[in-house]
Amino acid sequence: MPKAAVLPNAKLIAAATNITQAGYRINHEDCMYNCLPLYHSTGLMLGLCGAIHVGASSFIKRKFSASSFWTDAHKYNTTAFVYIGELCRYLDNQEPSEAEKNNPIKSMVGNGLRPDVWDSFKDRFDVDRIIEIYGASEGNALFMNLFNKNKTIGMTSADVALLEYDVAEDEILKNEDGYCKKISNHEPGLLAIEIGPNAVFNGYTDKDASEKKILRNVFKDGDAWFNTGDLIKTVDVGFAFGKEHYQFVDRVGDTFRWRSENVSTNEVGEILNGFTDVNMSNVYGVQVPGCEGRAGMAAFSLEDFGSFDWQEFSQYVESNLPKYARPVFIRIIQEMDTTGTFKLKKNELRDESFDLNKVSDIVYCLKPSSNTYELLDQDWLNKINSCEAGY
Image (cartoon, rainbow, N blue to C red; front, side, top):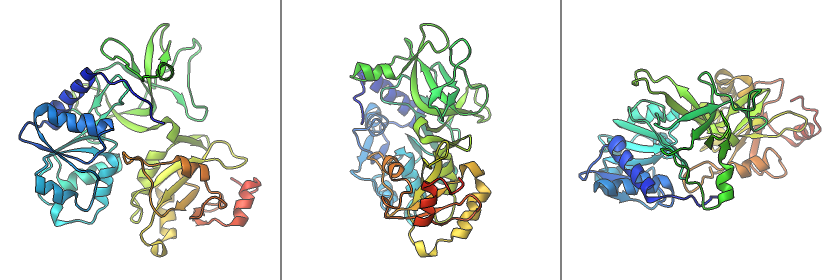
């Protein structure tokens, strides 16, 4: 459940100042499109407070609508847009329309715009500035794509470290002296942010909950770091004044281990979404009896199930994903379930897994000796549950 984060007014003002001056670059003559819930920091801090800070107008819509978005943008001349990545995916999945042409949006600030959507969205809708940020309501630092580079959360002024992390064991790796080890290349690592005078950790109203987010004695006795719970990696964005740039990879709990390899649900999802008939897939790991780790499973909806080409899809998966990252199970669901801030819900899907006694949807699977998805029936499920399937 969400926890009550302590949010000093100074932090809110600082965020609004940075976002408007370095992010949107808007003033009192602009109008912002805001269709995000104002109980969430993105809609409130990046959206409403940013507009108030510079005296800009704000068009606030109670509920996001992909079909009316560009019509609204023209009608209210919204020059800025506060976004969540999935909103951009919904818009990019829409059929081209006259309303999207010559639209007034010139800059947008938000988070969660995945690399597989970035180029398509920016080019199709001719947006000059996409300023992806990374932060947390309770966090002690802000990353921002100040230089308007592609596919990056940008940089930060805080002292940060990417820690070596064992996904399978859900633990931070340490050296012989008991201190954490830093990632030495562009591989994903657990993001930790040092707590100090210029990076204050306000935490939650619950002191115990706050303490659980603090890593102590990380590199030396007595130091303290905020544990973001996110896997991040460095990326080469070209000339950037020597500033290290970063890219979000996955939440720690959303990465699983299969065949002794770490698998990012976000990265697999991006590949699956590249298939013509898959608009948005929800990827997660599920336990298979008698097997170490978790096997990949994906859920997505189809407009026309009867015309879906499973042979072509299987070939696409085989060509674009290494064997360990290919979803073993595919669940066809009626409708994608998301949170109020458009994040994909995984818990119920993960709990129901591929159990045909719990799932009323159609499930397909990859058998160990095959590269083609086949319908999962009770006989094969019995073999899986009795550890005779060969996974």
